[in-house]
Amino acid sequence: MSPDKDNKNIKQIIYDTYKSRSFVKSIFVGFVSLINQIFFLYLFTDLLYLNYLTSSVLAFVITVFVNFNLQKYWSFGDKGEYEIGKKMAKFGLLSVSNLFLNSLLMYIFVDIFNVWYLMSQFLITATLFLFNFFIYKYYIFI
Image 1 (tube, rainbow, N blue to C red):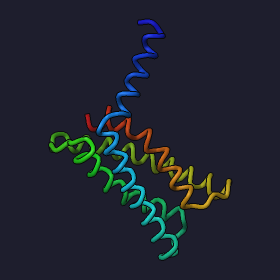
Image 2 (image 1 turned 135 degrees about the vertical axis):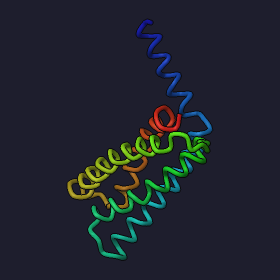
Image 3 (image 1 turned 30 degrees about the vertical axis):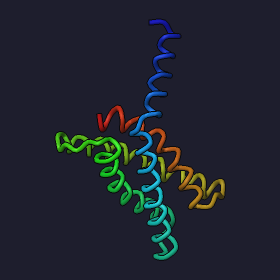
Image 4 (image 1 turned 120 degrees about the vertical axis):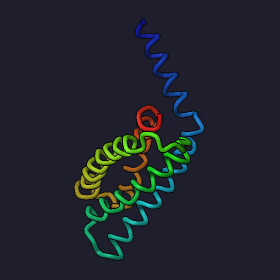
């Protein structure tokens, strides 16, 4: 295959991926997860007076459970229980990677660039969403 044809195929895959119905549903789930994460981040930081990084981790963990179930059963219509342990493990591994990136980026945005912690979380979550959808569609919920 020629490099031009490979690029065209890659572009078509990306185009088809992001115009799908599951992408639209996943955006909705992303907003629900974002609201969930921001709510718990605010609760832990401003009402329970935990450090914003600790709060961010706790909010992230809660959101992972919400996100997995909504993505699996609604966004991707994966109603079966076949290989659910394997899917949860993959989702968990991706989530741990996201947790590391989320915490690192929160530190960089808040402590180094002085961006408000809630705005930082919003920007980080939106960016991770775009990457995660591709992984969900082609690796986890296939």
